[in-house]
Image 1 (cartoon, rainbow, N blue to C red):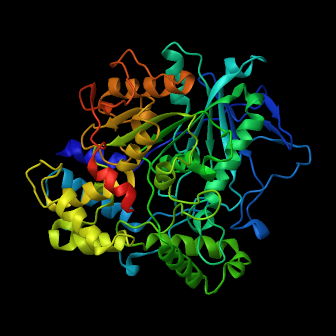
Image 2: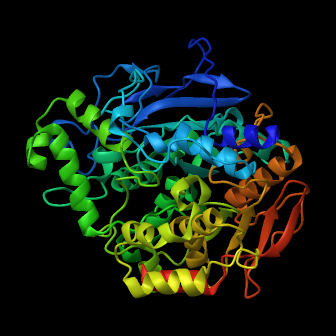
Image 3: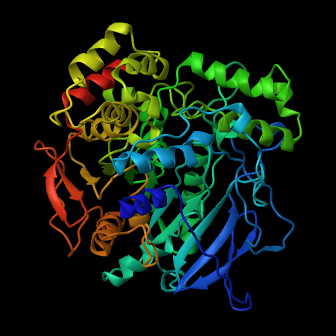
Length: 540
């Protein structure tokens, strides 16, 4: 059982390293608005860190779409100042959920708290990198590519996850993916990690608010790549966007942006890992807005726009911290020209970029990390789902619970107890079925895989994606390297392959997927291709 505890614990945390060298011989790049010098050269990869891609979203630009940066005075920016958007963690998503999930997957009884109390909230110290002026990106490029004046290397843009309320661009190190591709016989590629606004700063919506500005930040960064990546040896016509959890959900929205009408898109391929989208209704939007304004003691977004940054950061942190178990108050909303409907509906209507190549992924137990421990009895389920998904009618909820996910605990429906049943519904509705929607929209002409290394919980796979030889959360190194091979070869050529596993066939009419499990990489059938997902796509 101790092994399970370590695996689960490391799915909730991550560690990184920072190394710098003398600036004397590091190269510079002249952008249209500034000159930027590489921050470091590690393992043959230049890191151009903290490059501004948009103006500071403060003052009149607060809560507004991103704008182009001003031309600098001519000084060289070294990227030495780290930037991190204001962010916060729900209290339940930290120690509470961690302890509950550890006990559940270990087969032990959970006896801890089952709700979040305002008395338990104490503001913590702020990371010194946190600032509203956070619209920056990092570019990692192999020295061999950068020094080749005719280089036109593939590009991957990483969009971080974190529930649309937390995350930052260097949290995972893209160098590991570049080096794995080189070890596997490739020439590497250019990696871009972007910041985008989070929480109330990026996803405030409702009366007087401009919705989805965090998604617009991402789009602005993708357009920056189109204009500038050639300066780093990258090919703007060979770009893959990639993200996990909220990052995967963000990729989902970029595929359906503007209903697929603004063509061509600023990318050619997409990798969606556990794409998380919560169906936020207009009533939920207004509730989050009023809660935020109430903490600020103002009544309008315009008034909030004029407050001190420290007040807004504190209110954002408090509101998110005290969210009920399983709830995250902010995320993409179906409103405006960028996202006129939920991505699932836009796919159903054929309103998306249909020319791109796609890889999708889900984990074997996406829902347990978001499931309240109070779901240990079947009586609590109807109320939970009426609260979580107010768009569902009472008859919808009855069909969901009686027909699609009945209280049958013999394993035939994919669960053996009430908690597992709730986790299956939550995982499917928020994450797993999104991969099915994408597969179907692209006529199954996609590559799909499932991360099933026990316990297969949400975000456990990311340490495999970015494995660098130093992560204790990776229990099978061969599986980690195989996953990296498939991902990086897809980035480079659109065809995933690895000598460490079987041929990666397209999803096809047989709903095939690769399964990365504890012992091996195997071809299996995709469990998301089901009547459950088909019903959810039209009901939510």
